[in-house]
Image (cartoon, rainbow, N blue to C red; front, side, top):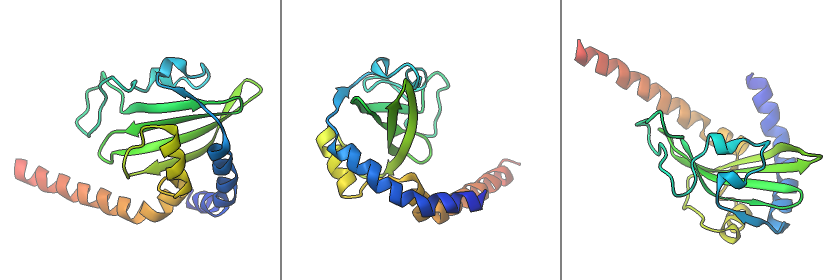
Length: 165
């Protein structure tokens, strides 16, 4: 599994620049509701709309989604979704999806921990400035930190169990 991840990281960056250039140069129609998403994506079933409640933290209400749409955009060949991902590690994600022959294929996933973007122009500027990292770059840069967080959480869990006894 780690070998596949490493191969993905090594070869992803060359393809990333091509798809990101296409994203930046594409004119999109703004989308502000999951009901406007292409049916094939199905995110309207698992993602809250911008004005709806969602699980922003690790305190979970099972009736709510852990993802909330900020905005999306569609063109003839590309569709993107920019959303908030709640949970213990709050972040924002950008997913680029290619539309081809009535099929939708995810071609790029990016993460950011920086300021929220409120429009397509600012989102494209963030991509140009590389403040939104590809998933492979994010994993490469943050894998050690994630291991540390998990190990810390496990230690805290065991401490709490000792205190409870």
